[in-house]
Image (cartoon, rainbow, N blue to C red; front, side, top):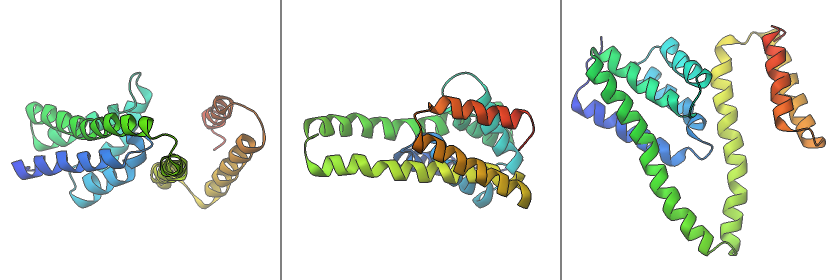
Length: 189
């Protein structure tokens, strides 16, 4: 059991609030920093609890942000009570949703009024590589514990092949994802 004071709970909420403002590609894009904060820095979650929270939330139907609720819940359970579990779930969820929602509301109104300005168009174009890099770091964090030197080569070739297919053909992304799911389901990777 871990001991958390009110400053720890406030810190948890503030950290998720800060991540909210960085989560341009969605909550999953800041997963590496959540891991650093919850597992590496504070030890509030074990690596297994962290990975299970992500896996369970991604497998369950519903919004993509469910993993944040599960992480907060697990922090509270590790602190010793169901009330703290509910508090952790609520703090993580509100921390991740409120700041980005408020920013999105005001920023989209402003961007819509100023959509023809070169700076606004450049900013929108510049977000694409940022989102790709954040999602790539998330993928690496989730894959790293399971990769061997042999599987790294195969995984690298699959990523390169998928990128080339999506770049050079008109095949829809969902077909490439389905092929990846099939390859993984068959145990070939």
